[in-house]
Amino acid sequence: LWLGGIRLEHEKGLLGHSDADVLIHTICDALLGAANMRDIGYHFPDTAGEFKNIDSKILLKKTIELIAAKGYLVGNIDATICAERPKLKAYIPEMQRTLAAVMGIDEDAISIKATTTEKLGLTGRQEGITAYATVLIQRMGSYTKKYSLFLLPTLRRSSREDSLGSFGKWIARVRFLG
Image 1 (spheres, rainbow, N blue to C red):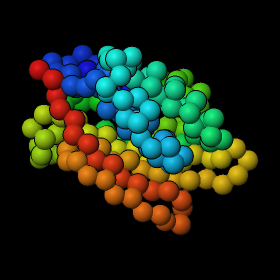
Image 2: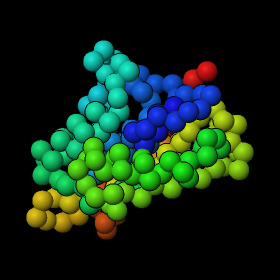
Image 3: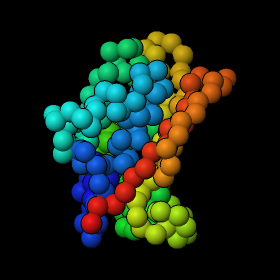
């Protein structure tokens, strides 16, 4: 199981075209959305063989390069992982160090929290893991934009503009493998 850029020993892993690191994918989507650059599937499609089994840290690094090319820097990230098992509290500092190194930002700019659904829904039945991320990006030398991504077990998309800038919600299904 890959989560937050680190490998966790667990009897199940996540199913995906890449390493299926749901936290990194959520952060990538939030960053791309905040910069109005579509989503992770647009830039790194699951139909492209070059991304088969790719380390999601590579996708995150490329995402940082994409938003930087458009003139944006990461301000901070607030993320939540929702999983019944494995228990994640002990892994969070290593996830923060790993993600900070990949993005070239301070560890204090990355907040990661873990929670459960109290045995409700697909995460409660241990059929998947969900992740949520809100990111603040800054145009180099200008204003800030705030954006949230919610990765949930249904497919639909909605977005709205608020006084803080771009805010959007993407929902996608995540399943456990084996």
